[in-house]
Amino acid sequence: KAGVTQTPRYLIKTRGQQVTLSCSPISGHRSVSWYQQTPGQGLQFLFEYFSETQRNKGNFPGRFSGRQFSNSRSEMNVSTLELGDSALYLCASSLRLNNYGYTFGSGTRLTVV
Amino acid sequence: AQTVTQSQPEMSVQEAETVTLSCTYDTSESDYYLFWYKQPPSRQMILVIRQEAYKQQNATENRFSVNFQKAAKSFSLKISDSQLGDAAMYFCAYRDNQFYFGTGTSLTVIP
Image (cartoon, rainbow over all chains, first blue to last red; front, side, top):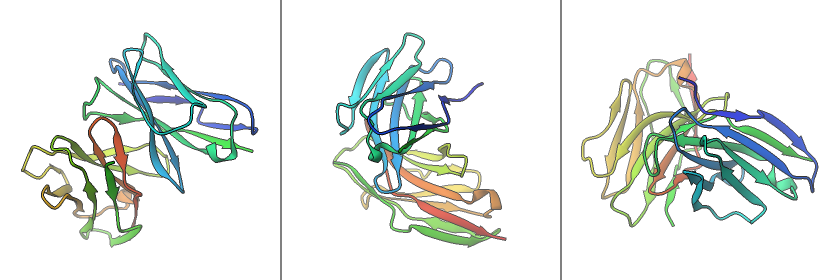
């Protein structure tokens, strides 16, 4: 079966712009969570969605938002981009919340210039 | 807050030999999961092995096994018969209602 699909793979944006990243979970998976990976901060949790509702949120500013659609696909939006937002953004999907069977995608590499 | 510590930024091992990667964590919870993920240059986080905290038996997946010491909050990964394809960044992770990751150990396999 298809894995977790993240699009686009690479993205270059200018400071001040906004960006939307997409994550399509494994078929049947209803939980999608997002993580930011940077060399300095490592992997940090952004938020998790289940059944179109945000269930948990990490410690990121309000410029970072997300949503989940009825087909479980999720999007993450970052507004007013800053240079420090340059990172690899990973999403992971699971059948249900707090289930240990999480599968990660290959991420979107965002570069802010 | 829960923290995960990987004290070895880099490790190397000869092909076919055994290597152990260290991980400690801090939590006040009693019910949680522990994981080792592998991240090759392709960037995808690949699950290596997982352990439920309530299980005393150490998890094993083929050449990969863990030494889970709940009281000491230690969760080390042993890779036996190392192969060139094992070279990657390895992340230890703790999960209750979200993942907490360590800073990673870069493993080099020497032919």
